[in-house]
Length: 174
Image 1: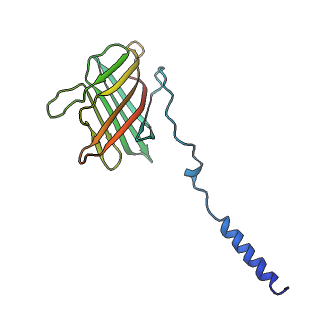
Image 2: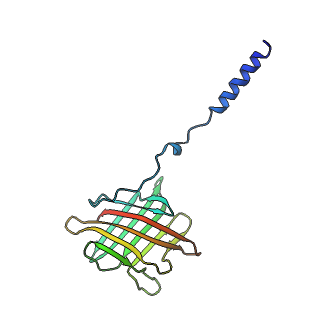
Image 3: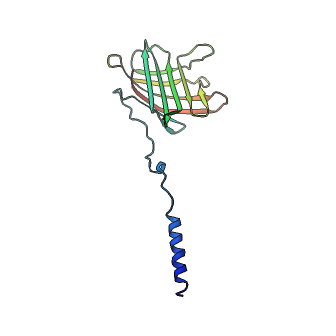
């Protein structure tokens, strides 16, 4: 039995090392993504769920003029834009409230809102005519703050694939 003890020890040591030699993946230690809080303080946040997956902007530009507004949100990784989600409202609203807006048709120039998403592979925009539901929770022209929530669907430009954009929220300074 003594002649097998060194081999048994060596086998056990190798087995133990093999079980514990995996390197930790930093992605495994990241907390799950959560939507930004629905604030109305001009926190410069923009987030939503796209097909149930949290999507938060890392870069955000906003502009409001004469009742119209534009939100351009981007996700960047290593200084490279990987995804984009834009909202452009072409409707004259000057107060808080709930709105159902029709999509802007780029071929006829009719409609009240245009939405666009690029996920790194596909482009999505105007769907089959379903309205965008948007609620403006704060519109403060003195402090330049625009806040709200939204839900809508988008259709892939080159296929019939639809994506659901839900629980959207923004709180921006313009």
